[in-house]
Length: 244
Image (cartoon, rainbow, N blue to C red; front, side, top):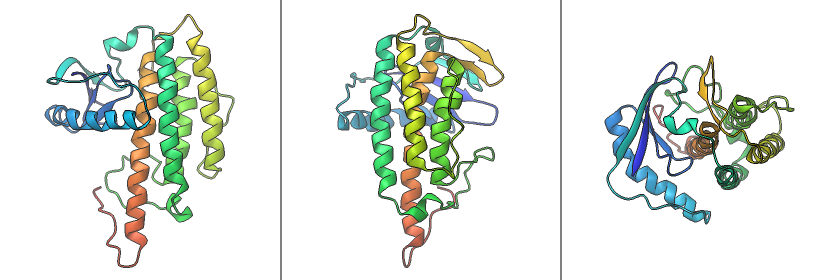
């Protein structure tokens, strides 16, 4: 299986391993050796998720082979520079539909108090203001319309989502706007849109893979917070690990 490695810099550290042959899959670890060791198991989990949603998954066998290494903040891989195909956008939409279904199902069964619980984790980055589930949901919505897609030409007509708003309403509104833009993009002759700014390099291909990865990343965080909330609030609960 082929992987592309990103050594992170700036306000984030560690290594990201992306399998660009499998849209939206990535995993993180603190070192190159550790992240390469994690790839097979994390890839199997991703393939199981695809199967659950009846989504096609190409065969990924053999040893892990590093195609490219990059270092920096918001760096592009060589793969990211090429125009994406309309089929890649269609695949992104199907993956986002699956990830959104999982996200909503997870939230709907949580008690209301869990959405505002501030977990006692020590590993939160100082710049990450999304600690509660409500804040994470607003962050997911805003990243789609006001960060990722804005990097490739989208001008949102929506105000940024606030954790004080109704999560069910703003998740739908921001996703509808994102889907509409992606469908327009699929019909556009300009599907590379490589650009560089203060926050690094962006392109359509990079945005597509990040959209899928980002929602699944925070869905996993929300599930963990929900489990830890239950442990902390039930009678005799021991609480969440501060290092989790």
